[in-house]
Length: 164
Image (cartoon, rainbow, N blue to C red):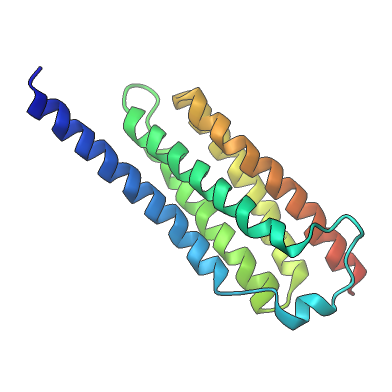
């Protein structure tokens, strides 16, 4: 194998990783347009609500892991375990992820946001299973995201119920 061939593959791999991270963090950027602000500060929240400073680093790590997982599936793909349905659903869950911030923080509609996060949770679970079938490590990278969204769904529900 020539060094030029290996270098070309490495460049393609790096560019495709960058593309998946860009797509993933674009959803984060859309969601970040809607911030908690005074409305959120005025809401009753359960005692187990994490401090605001926890959310940005957790979400950053999760988005990084998600982007890497999608890239791993994109690179693996082919054969009888097609990557297209898994990656299409990955894009759907990114849209649901970004929509949640708009519904909760933008429209101040915790009930609608809870419906969205329930759909998001189901999409993430399915993505995790599909990714796992294609490449176990990619599915494993989605697990922390599923766990965090499970917690976020509980928090969303509690806030919705505490603020009729």
